[in-house]
Length: 115
Image (cartoon, rainbow, N blue to C red; front, side, top):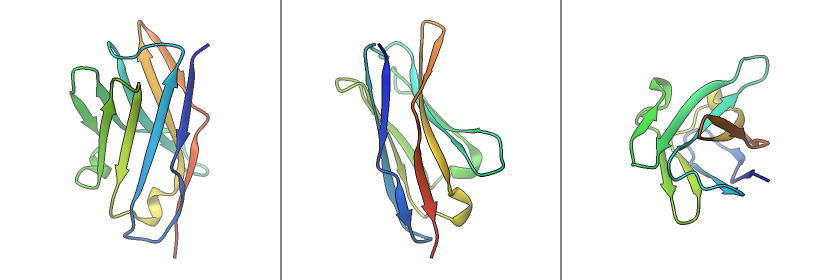
């Protein structure tokens, strides 16, 4: 059974930082990609970033320069370092992982940016 478990969310003040982690188990995603999406209240889920096993990264324009995605292939884990957080970054952040045409999702972790 494939599981994606996110951690690292929480409440942070504007301008602050958080690091999200997503640990995958039950399947090796080294040949696929792992990434992050988010969904704010009343909005559709949107792509944030993803990283292939080969190290290629794709980051949404609205987080470029602030968010960095990285992976530890040995741990089957993906990270999202979020700096200079803004109130509009408030959302549930979901990890996803794709391999062999199947996309898996985690249950999400809440990030709230507020003073």
